[in-house]
Length: 557
Image (cartoon, rainbow, N blue to C red):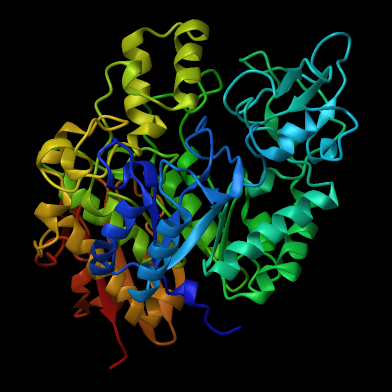
């Protein structure tokens, strides 16, 4: 099929509200992003995935869009966006927008029209239903808690919202909705953006009979029974035919509940739908039926390896994989997967980078990950902005009987705002993010973890990421080699091999804080270390040191 540019690329996600403030109002903005593009060029990334910057009431930090063709004034103007896009392209960096079309804001003109009367032409842009026996049409619960139905007093019907009540779900069954979405996508691509990350795209097709289900611990039936994944694909092929086929794009779909088999359809290498998908198996390895994801449990390494192995082998030669540790919806990688103590944070952050970036697929770096930024030491809920977290705190303390301290321990472990605290640029006031009061508190450890201290330091986490990104650009083996998991039952070592023709690479990563005996396979005796992948200055014989990562390259003699 040939190589697509996004197969060799490394993507960097920017959460605009927390990246760089240029005005002193405490919130990041587009001119702030533009000012930091040289930093990203130094890191060597190829693509920016830009979380939503559209006009929005900001009920869900921009994932509630009121105008798809306008910029939220808090982020700047369309002229600011155009300048950022041009400057990024000048530096060889592409821009991928966040496409949020499962739902709009309730302040979007479409919804304003739709709720004005039952006869309005936009009524069928959303899902409306009559009461059933005087209550909601079904008993399913939403992502942010409560019912998926909200009563509209004016028209005496309920409307569907799988997320916040201010995020009504669009009705993709209506071809006029698809026409509007595709026209909007074409408008952005004609402007020069390079693709889309598609928010919860796997949720756009619903069972429109809206059945009730067996209630769970929250009193509501789980939402997943509503989603009809099979019916999404004709709409994505229509999107490809009508819009994406006219441009050289990268597209990645967020698909909750995706399996290897479903991903083969979404991300098939025939190019009929998307470039790749985000799946959530590896970030969903902990939790409980009563508390959901809100526990302090750590994932088991054998389970993590099993997930990565299944996806690497399952997509080989059929579809393309996406690789990530964290994003705006996940806690910080080094706190979740490794060791964020002062002693081991830098070493283990480099180990995580090596482990992920040498697998097959497109790696994603979330802002600050390249510095080893950590979770925040939340002590009170007024330090947290996230809607999901506030609903979870009520559930934990009221339904599960947790104390405040127990609930806050879960927040420090898993809350999304761990990833949304401001970017740590330097050790000064507010970490160089703003001259004002930041919308979320800056992590106190910014005095030691910051870009200023790392960019010029060849031994820093930043420099380690930079080396791995450069390696991907030059190595066909890293981009196209097959993946084979070794030591699958080890609870402490993640070992795998990459193979392309007669070239082989062994990757060894320790997920523990003590030395381990380990002998490399015979075929790697005398193999040369891949310096960009090693987080110690040498490769020891017969042992793996705490949180060590190394790679050995065996070439034919």
